[in-house]
Length: 132
Image: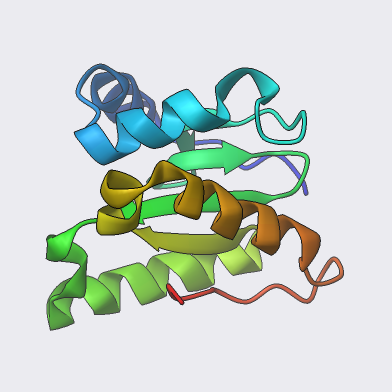
């Protein structure tokens, strides 16, 4: 994937979001940081283009989004779909995980990421993935 830079306001927003992560994001970050997930490196609150990804694994070109209740409104679903399509055009697959999974048992969320990593489509064949 070619490097997709982010505008300065997006970078500033990413820095702010890193300091104000929500509990599900903190729990998942603690489970996948420092290569704990099969040695893969994830970044948190990673800016790409006009967006800030909750988590991003550059080597797998995988964005992981932790979706709380606000993501299930019709308006937010439309925005998320447009975002996921934009990311897919950049060669980044999106995996959406319900925040409730992370809160109930973070291992379920980690297992979903691991499963997605083992079933990534070939380069150029990416599509956005809704939560299972």
